[in-house]
Amino acid sequence: MARLNVNGAVRDFEAEGDTPLLWVLREQLGLTGTKYGCGIAACGACTVHIDGVPTRSCVRPVSTVGPNEKIVTIEGLSPDGSHPVQKAWVALDVPQCGYCQCGMVMAATALLRDKPQPTDRDIDEAITNICRCGTYNRIRAAIKVVAAGGNTKTAGLAIQHTDGSTT
Image 1 (cartoon, one colour):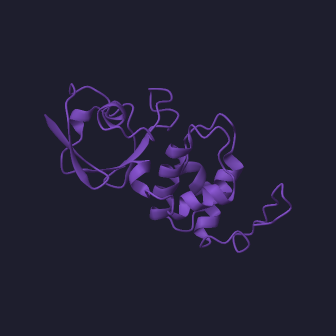
Image 2 (image 1 turned 30 degrees about the vertical axis):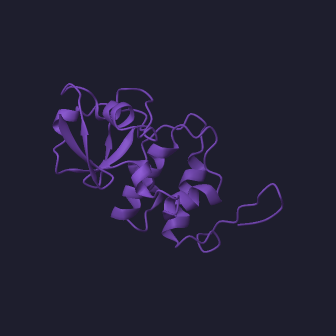
Image 3 (image 1 turned 90 degrees about the horizontal axis):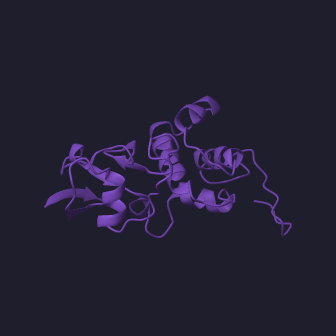
């Protein structure tokens, strides 16, 4: 029996040491928000934070994560969706299929923590996740909204919705 600190709670699990952290989170601990995409750390759908660092969990062997390291998954970011990045994602209708979005949110959250006012270059360098639907413009806009305190108008954006309203 081994232990991980996940979303603020110590959790027991049983797995071989070379098992990717992703599979322990999903299969052993039932935290299915972290997605499997490519298995080679290219797409970022599996991004979690380990001690605040965005980490691709599909290639991180569980044996390399110590019991005192703090893992945060999308479920631990905000159980009720009230994190500013999650709110911006909803306000700007960022997801299409949504499969990659948990990893995107985790990457954006780390970026904004480290650089509260990111430039376009900062965003390009930090958000290396792949979105097959191509929602990169909305992802960038949502990050800018959070950087502007959550107000789309002060972020220099005016999003026209299909119902005619503007955010």
